[in-house]
Length: 249
Image (tube, rainbow, N blue to C red; front, side, top):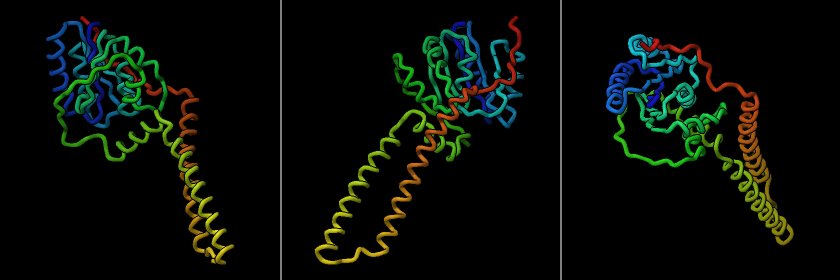
């Protein structure tokens, strides 16, 4: 197999047929030996039905039906896992993920099996020589990425690939400790020299302030511990219900 075109489907019913037509035309300009892998990520619309109808007429199309919605990034990894081409062209049917990869890079990328991940981080840490290219980005009327989903993806990216929050907590704790020590020394000195009372309000505010910091830090630590807990279960990151493909003539 020379070329694999990999895409994911989620609320993509209006774009599947056009994507298949344009992807097939583009592939045929390059090689006759190609396949199109479509991963249905538990789409609630008719994306799967349309893709299966295409697969029944085009033996080059393979539809990977996941058992439920696992998420965009995991669906992309599943598509790459079911591709066989020496070159893999990963592209969204309705968004703007575009990436051409050699088989050796894809095989290395698939070595990562963690459950909570962001594929952009995996692209970076996998290494190899990577070259960026400018593209003309289109857009659809409504994105399947809501604001909350984008924030969740950002948070997932930070906690999956970075220990910076933990380092910042340590530094912040040190700064607060030094400031608290300096303020405490000043209050004691002021009390000894001028007999000035510190006041009950300042004590309560200090307790609330430190209590908030402790709760926040424990929350961040808890998130990292929960991710370790999930990964130790070694669950598959996707479950495939069935593969839809017409036998090659």
